Length: 357
Image (cartoon, rainbow, N blue to C red; front, side, top):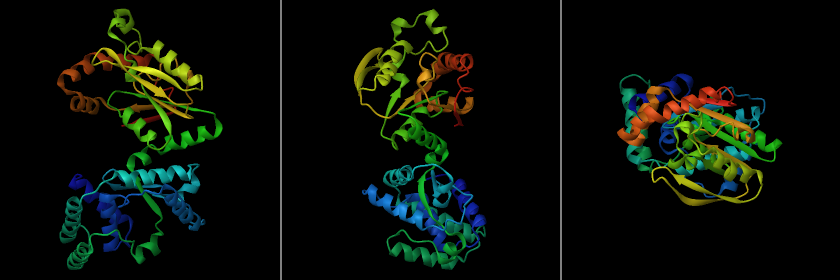
């Protein structure tokens, strides 16, 4: 379960922001915090049609200043009234929603624990609602099987809510999806690089994008410099830690050929080439990992994304992910090499979008 203090803050934030919130509106907020959409969506087209109809039915005179709203537990509401102010494809918004609904698996046990926290906040006077009424309402909902419910009439009349619940990552990186849509409309291909400090979430972001678009995703970790090429002179070279010549000849040239191609991954833990990876011809191509913006091949990109993480958080993540021995190697060997590469080639400065993770 998410941190109780953070969850209480979500409740307080909504209480202050929406004075007309009723008990059922808090129930709905908590339900969405735990279960997101609350159901699997196996018909993408029907979901899109319903989204389109709802968007068309909205009062076009009502302009919302709010696009995203944090509801906790890694989730957010995206408000449909705000979409007219962006160039985002409705198809992409629907994918945000469907992917979220189909990947968030809530727990009745956690849900009940959160309802009890809400009740506790009311008992302690943090939220000013009648405790007996809440207890009766929650007992009634339990008897009904904790179903998804609608907003109260008071809430609907006061705030005209029209939104979808999506992963917070989609909200955080919304500008990336906007950029990809924009490039798709104007160019034959999208070639996007995700570079940045180790432990900053490059692979996670690439996976997030790959879950929305039909795209190829390449990992520069598959092009770690083989041991026989790791000479002193090569490792002193900025960006020399990647086998950039092979990456250029196998991936960049493959992309430029506009045909299907194959490349071979190198597993640095085994110091050996392993699987062959078949690449299909696709419009959108994401290249993620350290050194992905190396000047040997960065001329292909029409979108460059840089992810930053502070040193303390970076160290914690590497230790948790890789263990003590590998942590020492990162700190003493690989991070200094990355930093040299970032500085010499102005990687962060030359990026289109920069995120602090």
